Length: 287
Image (cartoon, rainbow, N blue to C red; front, side, top):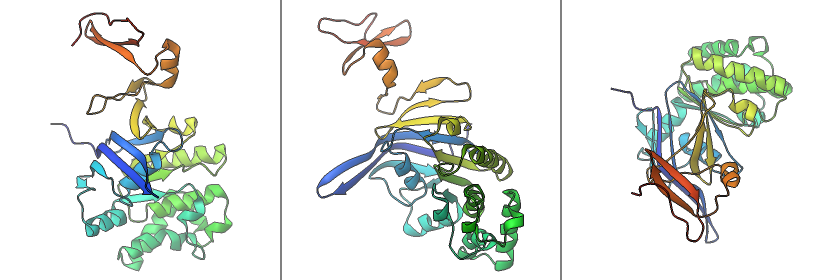
């Protein structure tokens, strides 16, 4: 029997309301991630990527749908369970490196802080911090103020801090967005190594195609729904949700002249979608 996905999201809906205006950030998103995968979420601004990360981190709740991470039903969990999940099961890496770090603390103190807040004994927390600083190749800087370091060095400290409680899930929102490409490559290589050494599942948001290519799968989100995926085989697949909806890539629709309506027919075990025009009919047998 196959194991359930580590992350299983189905029909997620998130609506933001202000001044009697409703904005649908997620409109029935379906997505699954296996344990140990590194997945990149891509799509235009406002597509729902960061909203989904906030749901995954239990910083927010969906208005509808289901979300299970590591066997925990994030939607049904009570406040105590959600707080424990945030503390021990998920690490978050923000785009702004300074947002990940506490001013006035050394690198070692920053990395140890999550474990100390979780009630870990100081000796154990600082020993773990030293291990993580070594893992991100920053041991020589453990007594320095991270805010006086380069952007790439800060992000390494931030990664170690996000892993302070050794969570199985790491969420990263544009983790290379504030560093040059040479530093970004080093950060991506580091994430790959940490994924292997600490059995991490990593979900990251990016607008950089080069960053997305470093992941096992690239999942495109458009208009609050999962629209397509691209894996290591470089084949793009269109996602069909539980209601049978799919989103065809815009460039493909434009190439064949597909507008707001189409004819659909079953042909030789496949589904044929063609531009609709008055008087047009599908080909083959119809169901």
